[in-house]
Image 1: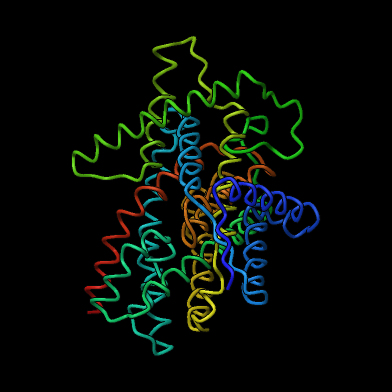
Image 2 (image 1 turned 90 degrees about the horizontal axis):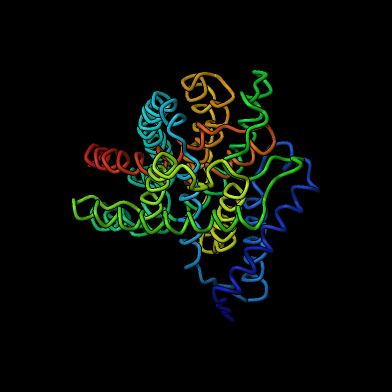
Length: 402
């Protein structure tokens, strides 16, 4: 087996090429256009398949240096925070609580589904949890944190492999179903954005003309992002001293919200980049590269031995997520255009991760129009509140099946 380790520069080059591949696929394949499949998902999945073929047929393994991926995630969430205006936050207060309540409720349903399918197939019940909220709502980080407990306490020797496999396929599936769900809801209910001329939070609308992006606005955006990240890291160190450790990207998201709602009041002439195409473009590029790196680096051959049981568990979870999103989340959020965009993101949250959720919403809004509220409440629920609630839910389910 020949192993080729690509450095950071080479990894970035491949990620850019993967994004180009995804954009080319979207232009040529009508299904990808019609159902708002993110470019990074289509390109990343195809790239991971190509690398898997190289591994299986030519005995060549490509490995990537992914340190830059974390930096891209931090920049992306910082830009989201800087786009979060107070008036939108206040309007999003009630919807935020509603989405949080529905999301926490779904954690129980997700685990009950996993336990039920595991029992029907004669699997150990903890496997149902591993393929439930541990890997799907929790993602790879939660799997890494909890798999030693499943292995040492509950005797699931391959707990890490099962969890990683479920989280990996969930990441892909979450990026596939969100766009179709949102489009179906929008067309079926004849929905449209409240402000068709409003700039997007992430990305640029399809066929939008006269987009004002120049040297000064880009430079200003980079300056404010860099200052905000510094504040976010400092904020995280203060919070950690109080006993609560947040992921750096969450702290930077909160720092962005603080700055974009205070600096204009104190320094009226300072050009904050909120609601500018420059900031939206930076966040879109960082999100695309992050997802491209995440998906192209999937080592699919490590998942081949997981068997059909995991596939059945995941198919059941996709079915449950789709039904819950359409018949619970969409009505609970008000059956509006914002609710449809949030539904696209929610599908990503329940099966993949917060970046997948936002990629889904970005693809939808680039076609149908802006939804600032969705880009505030979905990241807050997915990147912060759900991880805390999920830890309690997992532990209670483990106590229940013990």
